[in-house]
Image (tube, rainbow, N blue to C red):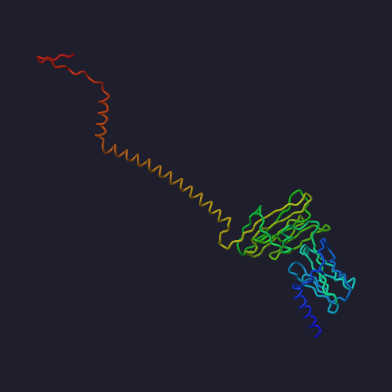
Length: 344
């Protein structure tokens, strides 16, 4: 019976954590920490009293991470099992250590210590990758802010795929440079960028962090990164960006993926058909004009030929009249009295 009550208590605590509200006057300002292996998230209540419970949540949605109770012990969310440890250096110490950290651990953490008799006390911590600050729109996503859509994105490659087919989205490192880390991100229409994979060299070895909900990630030792999609779906469409961190700086490669129905026409194919249709229409127009001109000239020749054939006498008389007009005039004889003819 006790085990049932204990499990029930864990379940109820995880349900009410996202809606727990802490008094504003007892809330400490946020502290920024660097993302690193084994990092400690400090949560030490400055009061005196007896500990009732410690709870950790993350993000604006207050997703539960861990709960500690002096009597019932510790309960962890699934993605934090074997990764979180309560240090418990003092009675009202809720500090935890986080192992096997990834870029998914970047964000805002909230700690609440319930102490008797004064009540709850809370603090917040911001975990960031200080070696490479997160992009601006990633910060906006963490804070839950919404901003107008940015300017149109310039893409270096347009990918086309049909529904339910397989596709690989690949990014190749730059030649003649040393790549230390590559981050692949995706952005759907109307959504901010989010990380789907990270490949980096750590202690001479290759570390791959796969956060993709669709497909699988593969990394080469040259830090070439690929996303393998099986049975492509409409939600796979959007922008994909690879950011290479090298000894010469940061370099980006951006691609766009369009998914069309089988047998359907994608936007690029549609525009291709439009251009081909316009070119064909222009060519047909030129041919039609040439044919009209040739027919008109042939018609005039036929008319002239018929005139020559049907009215040859008229044409002959016309020529004789023309020749007569061109002959010089002849002196006419003068008739005198006595019927003698004399020429003047």
